[in-house]
Length: 293
Length: 221
Image 1 (cartoon, rainbow over the protein chains, first blue to last red):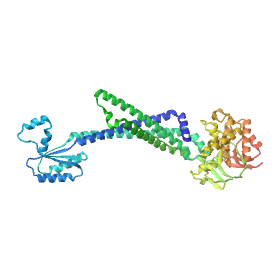
Image 2: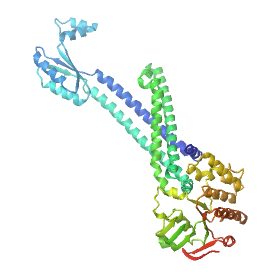
Image 3: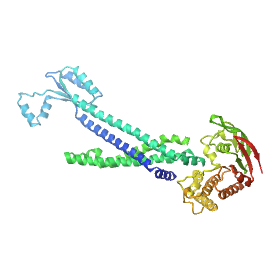
């Protein structure tokens, strides 16, 4: 209670400084929130893309079935592989003729032109994993052609990863700046109140008694900064979603990151926690100064 | 209660603030420390309050060498000392009530007890009706009264006063001195730094006279 009164008193004394501290935390929360959304969105997208990627191996006419069977067993034992499926030319034919246009094309052949094939799904679609599988396949007999997403998918994944790294770097820069601003503002508050701190010490106050209001001040700044940051993000995302829907007809509000349940409760709690942590750490960083007062 | 044993305090550029100081003060004594500016009066009080540490010699308070009090225990040592300054050292953004209650709040005293005690002293010293004002609204004498009550409210065995009447007119000074006398009559030891000769003569107490950091006389009336 006493500590809250002290915080209020500090706010009255140096309200403008407190507003700067709260504002900086709010900006940091907006940047961090932005990173969080970009990161989650990209991860979600990558997962979707990866689920659709597979390596397709077309087999030569008249291949040795036993040798291919051994290759499949070998591939299945690899930790990189998630699922290996042999597709006979008949199964492939049945699958293709579901499309009427392809049916017409296929009917123009005397017999089924499709080869037997193997479909390989990977646990993680990375260049290293793909290369490993391709190298194994290339060393085997009876293989006509190997097809995979190749360079385009790899480039897309690389670009998305670069975006993730850039947003993370911006996030880290803002976390550090925010910590510095909060700690320096509390240092200024401590300087402005050095006479009061001297009086407190003179009448026998412990360091803990003197420090608590300043820590609480950091936490309060963090709380308000977190709440404001969340509110700004909430408004921006809602405006963006409405505008995108109006312009393109795409409704992103069903995407799990933007559903009201996720955005209003979880995200609010996370923003407040991040803000409070920033404010708390900032004030702790500045408190070494009290001893010399 | 207090014993200074060959105490030296030397500041930068070899300025001797205290030069071989020896004296003792018994429990319940009222002692003036006097001398011209720069004689070492404030240094003695600062050393006793552990704002500073002697460069040589030892200072005992209640048989404890205060140089050995740890940082952690220092606040508890200071709770046994009331300090009154020439410039009052009040919290100007808080009420008179809050200023007086501060030592009790720090020691986590019961709120009801604080209220009764603060109101009792406010009434005794004629500050009734001003408890909710800030020190800005008080005269110099009244501010010093508040500082004295704050120093005395936890009944410390020792009060240190550094020129507490230095900024006051004669009438207010006498009122303040009467307060100190009353506090002393209840058994509290008082060390009072002042260069007001007239006031010291009128009080008829023990006087330690300093000059250039040395004791040049120690006389009891």
